[in-house]
Image (cartoon, rainbow, N blue to C red; front, side, top):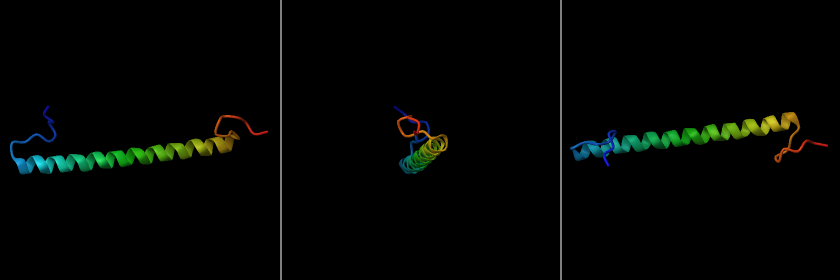
Length: 60
């Protein structure tokens, strides 16, 4: 299967494109991890502010 982002008849160009794509994808994965962490923090803060615990029970 050909990847249009990396396909090239020149080996050096193929390798360069492949490295660039993998760096971009790694950066994207890192960014998504960051978003996930921020969302978890937001949920934890919301729970604390509304008085709910981890399992959804209200404080007595």
